[in-house]
Structure formats: structure tokens, C-alpha cells
Image (cartoon, rainbow, N blue to C red; front, side, top):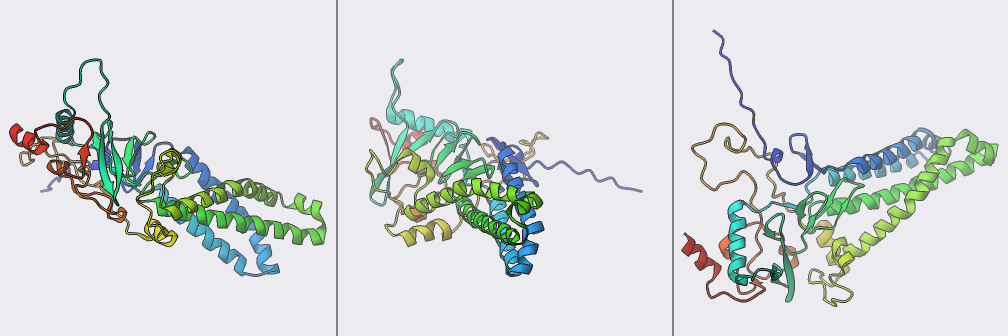
Amino acid sequence: MSVMVVRKKVTRKWEKLPGRNTFCCDGRVMMARQKGIFYLTLFLILGTCTLFFAFECRYLAVQLSPAIPVFAAVLFLFSMATLLRTSFSDPGVIPRALPDEAAFIEMEIEATNGTVPQGQRPPPRIKNFQINNQIVKLKYCYTCKIFRPPRASHCSICDNCVERFDHHCPWVGNCVGKRNYRYFYLFILSLSLLTIYVFTFNIVYVALKSLKIGFLETLKETPGTVLEVLICFFTLWSVVGLTGFHTFLVALNQTTNEDIKGSWTGKNRVQNPYSHGNILKNCCEVLCGPLPPSVLDRRGILPLEESGTRPSSTQEPGSSPFPQSPVVPTEPLSSNELPLKARVPEEMQSSVLTQQGPESPETPQEASEADK
């Protein structure tokens, strides 16, 4: 007698996550939906290096040194590894607030700001937070329904709030944030070295061949070399310039988003509270500091009620399959103690973290207890 085993379809949390990201390999790979320029990046790197290894490397290894293709292979593999690590990883997406949390925050804001007359513009939803004896403004995200942690910003392309948001890079097909910035920097640095290396030895190859058969004959016999030189020449300036710009930002412990907005320079004249005042310490924190784990439980299994099957009698009311969003800390922290993991709505107000607007005689905690 045969026994038929029926397997229920398991729904992973990444299938129901909000935002405009795409997932592959059962949620292990996370990218933006617009991946056309990323494929162009892969094509340019793979195509140029394939021509270089197929033609110039064999000739130069015999005429000059066998170490030339070896060093080129090391640079190529390192560049590809850091590119894929940047493109396929979670940049630091912050989960959106649950419905109960969003309602609590709205109630808290109304209690603090009071009733706004009809036709009058409500005050901005901003909280002040102290970091290294300096006040930093925390802005409210109307899409994610949370007060964003320091240095976080909402990406309009991926439709997610990203921690320590730097920028959205279409060349890598992903946002660049706290969890993949070091890999992005290592990618553009290694790509700069690889571009200079290939461009230099292409010139050497043409020079050596020209001594034997002439310059014009060399160009006629090696059209692939001419194509490599053109690609490297036009790529060199942008990639090397981008690497220099991000080296400057790393030395100051600053992000591209902060530099564009002039958060710590220009008219604001506010000192960067995240900088240690030392280039070496800033570089160590940005490139060698501890890497926080992803707060998105992408491969977690949804409860049966959320996955569209029969409801589960053991599921607690008010529970959600999605990760909980972080809350703003209640005590001043140094820059290396962020990001924020725990989320306890009752602790969102403190003597350090204050809401702008008229004060309410009733605290949010008392309002929560009265509501209960």
C-alpha cells in the first residue's frame, strides 16, 4: 500500500517584502529592479579582460615576464568578487513599521503637536537626537512610517529606507549603504588598478609589435587591442576620479548623500559628529569596522495565515511575518555604536530625544497605558 505525502508550499518572507527589489536564489540574492546598466558593467569588464588574456597576455608573458598575466588575473578576480558582493547583498534596508507601530507613532505625534487647524500646514515631523554632544535631526519617512535612524535615507528607486545611505549606483544594480559600502569602495579601487594595468600593457604590446612590423601594421593586425585601449581610455578618467572622490569621503567619514546635501559644510557650518578627527581612525571604522547583520529575515517562513492558506490557531494576535523596524535610541551614542536593533515603542521618548512642537501634559507612555 503506497502512502502519498502532500507537501505544502512554503512561502518565504522575501516574496511579500515591500519595496521595489528583486530576489533570486530563494531570497539569497537581493538587487534593484533596474539591472540593465549592471549587465553593461559585467559585459565591459568581462569583454575587455577576455581580449587581454587571449591576445596581449600570451605575447607579453613570453617577451617580458610570466607574472604579467598572473597579476592581471588576481586583479580581475578581486574586482569581480567585490562587484558581485556589492550587487547581490542587502545594503542595510530598514524594515517598515507594522500597522500597530505606525498607529502608535501617529498618536504620539498628534499628542505632541496638538490639533492642527484646517487649512494650516502641520509642523515638520522631526526629532532631535544628540550624538557626540551635537544635535542631529531625525526625519520621519511617510512611506516606511518610521523616524529614520541617523544617516539613513529613503531611496526613491528601491523604495526602501537604507541605513547609512550613500547613493543608488546603477552600475552595480543596487543601493550602496552601511552593509555593502566597503565592498563598493574595494570594487572601484580594484577596477581602477585593473584599468590602468590593462591600458598600460596594451600600450607596451603595441610598442613592442611596432618595433618589428611597424605601427600601422600593428594596428591592422590587432583590432582587439585598439578596442581595449579605447575602452580603458574612456573608462579610466571616470573610475579613477570616482575612486579619488570616495577616498576623500572615507577619510572624512562622510557619505555621498551628506556631501551633496552639504550636511556638514557650506551654509550649515556644522561639524561632522561621526568623524574621529583622524584619517586613519575614519578609514578603519568605514572599511574595517564590524559589519552589522541584515535585519531583513528574507528567508524566513511566513505563517499560514499570511501565506494565503488556512489560518493558524497558534499565531498570536498582532504578530507579523516581517522584521520589526528599528527605533531611535534613547541615550546619546557614539558614531560606532549605531545602527539600532531593538524596537520598543514605549521608549521612543526620553530627555535626550524630543519632538519638535508644543509639549503635551500627557507623556506617550501614559497615553499608551490609558489606551490599554
